Amino acid sequence: MSSSQALLFSTLNKHRIDGGHALFAFALVVCTFFGAGCKEQISGIGGPFFSDKITEKTLTLIDSNTVKFANYVQPIVQSSVHSYNVNAFGTTLFLGKVTDAGASENVQAWSLLRFQFLSSDTLANVDSVRLQLRLINYRYGDLTNTHLDFSVYAETNQRVNDSTKSLTMADLSPSPLGTFVGDIMSDSTNTIYVKLDTSLYKHLDLTTAAFVLVPNAMSNVRGFGSSENSGFQPQMEYNVHQAATSDLVTTRPVVFDFPLVLDASVAPAGEFSLRGSLSRREFVRVDVNRLNTPADSISQFSTVNSAVLSLRLDRALTRHSDNSGDTAGPVVVQLFAPLTADSTAIVVSNGTVDPVDPTLYHFQIRTMVEQWLRDSTKNFGFELRSGYVLRTFGTRLDAVDDVTLNRWTFYGADATDPAKRPVLVLTYSILK
Image (spheres, rainbow, N blue to C red):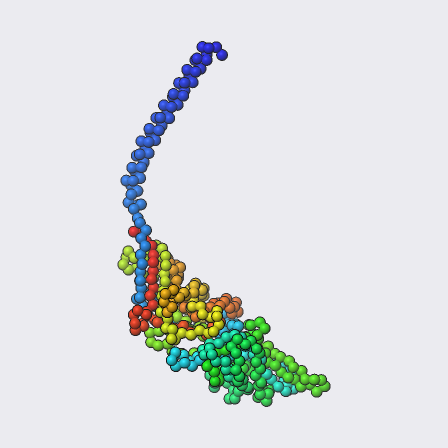
């Protein structure tokens, strides 16, 4: 390239660079101008829509018309077309009674059993019959007493089946087939044997006969293994005479067995009780339609941060067993259908004891309240139950309280002392 050509190229290139700088500067001025205009436009038009603030509020309710309570007993679980006693598949046979006038408690636990029967030919050669029961570590009531005293009766009118919910002494044989009396430590897991009257036993129609264990002079309730408790199942033992050989000892397992709880305990006016293995429960329903008054209060658009139902315990009328795992508080069970024997339910949470006041129990129901605010047609309420365990009843899985006899007594919405009434505290957030 000649020197004149090089000079010309350098000059042209300089003009291109200067032009680029000028174009960039012009674009920057334009963007700044329009950017400032855009900012002003957003501020002027969007301001009213972005001034909302999130406000947290607290609503305390003691109104019995908003939070409604009802006590009831539900001893039957319905599965398809068959009914079952709530204890039909429990692992413990409760047996005994507690009568305590000071605690307004009068409860009995009977045990119902039916066994596989012997053929009539074999039964004719039976010399003796014994009922075998295996103790488990359980005691409710008088925790210092080790006395066992109960009788075995026959029931021959087919009133005992897996859906039996009531019996009286009039339903049983006039005389017991056998009685056991003895002192056995509560932590014993020994097998006890109850000798039955063979002459009475042989006259029973064993294809339909059932056996009912009834407590006599007892001040507590003890536990025995049921057919659902592996290694602890009851059995009927027979000694069968055989002329040609030595006698044969044979046993028959149970067809079904479960405890029948008969509770005549009475809660004082203004209080309610929960009872395990009887399914005495408390139905609670929060009328969410009454929560949105005044109009700027909680609504379907609110976020529920907490919803705590607090109940005051009457400790004098509350009792639990000596089982270390049997002291957990009652549970909240949400219902997904109207309250019936086959209401679909799911366990939500356990109650918790107040860290300062041991007579105060708190139940967190936040999720349910928020759901009901969104859709009140799904509000079927919830239950307070003394405990829960999942059992299969036919084709249905249900949460029942067959693992305990615990009694929990709380002050209700009509308690004489307003300070002891239930309180629901809602904390929620709204746009303001």
